[in-house]
Amino acid sequence: MRPPKQFKAKPFPQHHELDLKIDSLSNQGDGVSRIDVPFHGLTDWVVFVPFTIPGETVRARITSNKKNCSLAELVEVLEPSEHRVTPMCSLFQKCGGCQYQHIEYPEQLHWKTQQVTELLKYNAAIIHEVNPAIASPQIYHYRSKLTPHFRKPYNNKISSIGFVPKQGGREYLDVTNCPIAMEEINTALPTIRKKTHGLAKQYKKDTTLLMRVSEGSVETAADSVICEQVGDLNFHFLASDFFQNNPFILTAFTDYAAHQAKSSESNYLIDAYCGSGLFALSLAKHFKQVAGVEVSETSASWARQNARLNGIDNAEFTAASAESIFKKIDFPATETTVLIDPPRAGCSPEFLEQLFNFSPTRCIYISCEPATQMRDLKKFTEAGYTIQDIQPFDLFPQTRHLECIITLVR
Image (tube, rainbow, N blue to C red; front, side, top):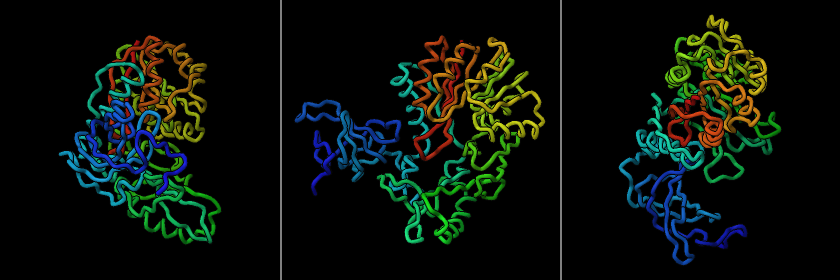
């Protein structure tokens, strides 16, 4: 077979097979092998092989060569790791959703901790102890939200409903059951799939379905009100709004954030990117006053309603961009903790500038994307903050994703 025109033929031809020893995992969840390629004068050339485990010897097939590495697909595990287990999902390695179902759970936690350590070193140039990742109480059937996709129907027929396949391509992988989704979702999925296929002629474009668990049932309308209990608090929010998707670990997650946020000096809390109030309201009892800001008008409105619902009267919420909060705050900076939980893209330069000008005594930075978190961390250290604690939380078992809480003080 002739390789595609864009294929770079060095250092390996397309589909070349070679035996590799896996050394580590990348922050994308792929196995990393480092080899010498004497013919091309290369040493420690990196080959990425998904679905492998450090310590294994595998046979891999080259799929592409990049400037500094090669990508390969797993052909055969020649010497398996003692940590290799049988995946629960029949679509594992085909579906792009999970990366770690082949790794026993304690080892997943080990490598997630290592992932944060390496990102800290290479992205922020900081050496600091990272606490072992805190496990999810539930490692399958934990996701309270699922969003299957399908392409625009052709001849009034939907070809498949599911998720992006690992190998890419335009067509979605057809998914009839997802082992990381809550049981309520998997029970409802066949009916929702059948109904969607039956209404195919009504869809005029690519579509994403919404399934969200609320009090034992599954809601599918974006404007449905979802009810979630975290600790002794109840939260209401729209099904389409952001809220953490692993309810089994949320109490431990918010309790840890509270422990890090409160101190003898901190009497006030600012919750930037506050959503519908998860952290602001969970932490409110530890502070005299709490101020939250959220760019989504509906989420900010629900945060206010959740404060009333739970009888919390020391928290106020503003619908605005995160950086605008500092124009309205009169809290003394030396008595204030700022909690930050931005989207995957991290904090905007404008927000960080306003934050550093305000100069709070303590910052709690929570992120679902440690790579951008470490990028921002460099700016914190340049602004005079020091790291007090780094704690990964595994809100996403069987995947490469995690949440990380970093405590900074000055």
